[in-house]
Amino acid sequence: MIEELLRELAPQVLAPLVRRYGDFDACEDAVQEALLAASQQWPVDGVPDNPRSWLITVASRRRIEVLRSDVARARREAAVAADVVPEPAPSVDDSLTLLMLCCHPALTPQSQVALTLRAVGGLTTSEIARAFLVPEATIGQRISRAKAKLHGARFALPPASEQPERLAAVLHVLYLIFNEGYTASSGSSLHRVELSAEAIRLTRQLREQLPAEGEVAGLLALMLLTDARRPARTTADGALVPLPEQDRSRWDAEAIAEGTELIESTLRTAPVGPYQLQAAIAAVHDQARRAEDTDWRQILMLYELLESTAPGPMVTLNRIVAVAMVHGPARGLALLDDVDPALKDHHRLAAVRAHLLELSGDLSAARAAYDQAARLTASVPEQRYLRSRANAL
Image 1: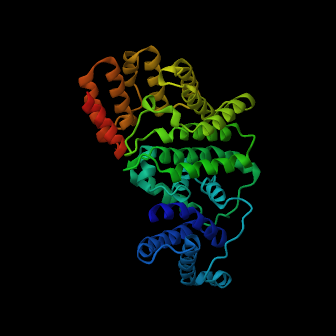
Image 2: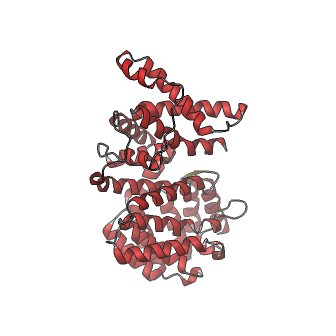
Image 3: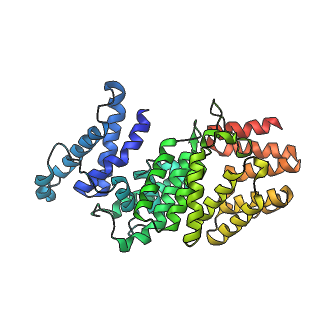
């Protein structure tokens, strides 16, 4: 419980410190020390009445100690040497301002995404590495270089002229945060609701500021239509329930209605983009009353459009599933050998292969593929589901 609270509060503590003192790197270090102190003290002394203020106070004192040790910053020290950072009443959400700062044009797109996932999403370096399919050390280096480049950057929303160049990275960041919350890459729980909820909240905030951006609306629709299925994705004991077997009466009808209306209106009024296409695919799934009613031909058409506009290994893998559902598992299996090598050791490739082998009747090979997929994922619910499929065969 305390760990979840600290994850939620981390960006809320970092934002006012950067606003007050600047120097993103030093402020982030101070916040990390405050979080560490809280993780050690709160289990013993109890959570304070205002945990955010407690963390801001501790982080601020640590930041001031560093300033006092730097003789060259003596004048600045005199201006900020107070025990508590006054919490401003910002005109916009500080988390959104922090999000835009992490997507500063001085950073590479990869560093923008990694830093924002760390500072705003609260993900660990290992979780970010799994999202990118790269070594953990690579992500650690990206974060360190990004923080160093933000030294002296002003904590404020960028001017309107600079927002478009940051938008693609911002949307990608929000997408990854949501995905980590909807299907956690590791741990005993399938969902980390605090992350998916935060991604939806920030995307709503972004849409309020950029109402004419079709891809912002598309991403919000995608999140709503996907998150609507969450109540039916697990059993009472936390076991994973695959989409075809879910009790669709448990899906969030209100979220589906909002997401469907949003994507339909956006497709009529804005240039089509990848997030809108993904939202349209999610809408087709959500509109099917039964799994067997799913319009796979329409889904295949949408994946073909998506692959032509935003190609990627996961898009290809999902298109292959749609091909198999329309033209048979043999056609899908024939396409799996040509997928991106980056997916070679990813559990999703093995799981798709297992599913298609099972549909084709090759149960022995399907069982081996399910076992392989279970070994490759760090998610306990996914491991249990994949092993249960293997055992059932």
